[in-house]
Image (cartoon, rainbow, N blue to C red; front, side, top):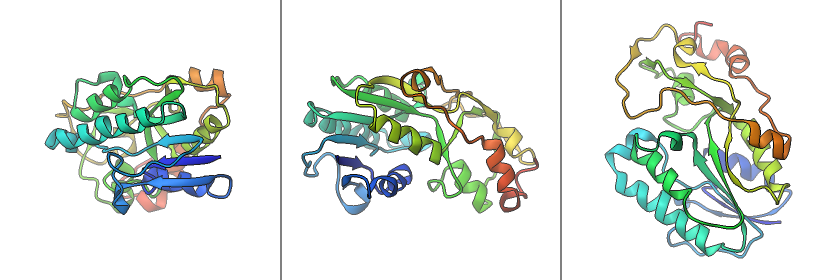
Amino acid sequence: MRILITGHQGFIGSSLWERLKDKHTLYGIDIKSGDDIREADLPEVDLVIHLAARAGVRESVKDPKKYWETNVEGSKRIIEHYKDTRILAASSSSVYESYLNPYSATKYIMEQIPHNNICYMRFHTVYNDSARTGMFFDKLFKGTVEYITEHERDFIHLEDMLDALEILIMNPNVKGIFDIGTGRTVKMSDICPKLPIKTDTPRERQRTCANTDFMLDNCGWTAEIKVEDFLEEHFESIRNYYNG
């Protein structure tokens, strides 16, 4: 297949590219190489995997305009241009409380862009041992976590996420809006019990937990990796923070 991956140099996109590069003909658009999805040339392809976005709750509060331009206007251009092409588009678990911050709002609005053959995939918290800069697990491995929150999160390992994407690629009749996560939650305070707890987080969801029924019923997919096992495996790297 000829596949366009937007955001192909990002945390998820770069790993997906490595997975697919020997199986398909790939095209990439990424702001890191100077290609903005609002202006870049768009190749003729058989499938679009739209991962490009501005992410992060706190940064969206500081500059909501940039989030609108990329997450809404940029996505609108991609989705409308490929009106006759199947699209897998990355959304977010944050849309369940889209009023909390501009990032969540832009992802929710993106989901309202009509298309007759699209998957809006509500990703939950993706992690691995080399997570995107600024994410919790990135700080955990760098030893720069300063505090913890009372949040509960559905953590899905990057490899499980990539498995889900590959299965969706091979199931062309699947479409709709659905979660991709584990269906299990972990308390942040259980990961780093030694750290002080910050309670003033009004713009963030208190609890996220994926509904796994859609992916199980339509694709036979469930996540395999438990975050507790991952933490135990990497205990020595993070033991100053994690007191398991």
